[in-house]
Figure (cartoon, rainbow, N blue to C red):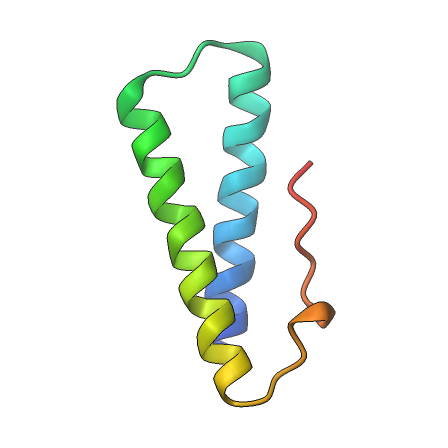
Length: 64
């Protein structure tokens, strides 16, 4: 479970950085696809955590 939470937090940090980049620059299609992949990975991690009865409300999901 700790590894899933760690991976989730790493992905959220990547999303935050991408969000900052998109605000100041125009993103391209490749970057947008990579961001979508990260978001899907976060969703998968949340589903795995929920499957083991972890309260995902404890996770910091703020992306700004």
